[in-house]
Length: 124
Image (cartoon, rainbow, N blue to C red; front, side, top):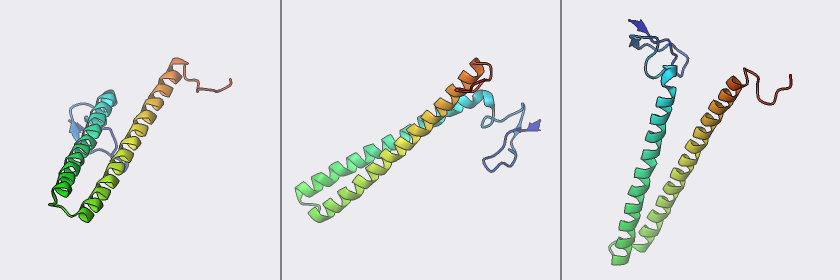
């Protein structure tokens, strides 16, 4: 068996021993599969975080209304949760933009292949 022909993010060679040319992480034929798996994984974490924060906010509100939690403590805690929710929202937007950039690059490459290698907007 041989080592994978791919490179790590630091540009050093992949050290995995594989029966073919590439490991799962570097196989160009499995790039779409990896992208879909990463997209699904990336979307699941924020959903759990948001659900957890919503649960905590509900418990916090109940505690304040029941008199078990001081109003000042409740107000500060809810502000912190609000900051967390905004950070999660920003994280989701960044991931969406990254996914759109990837899709646009793939579409541009497909268009370039379809046009026989000419670049979009080129004259000549």
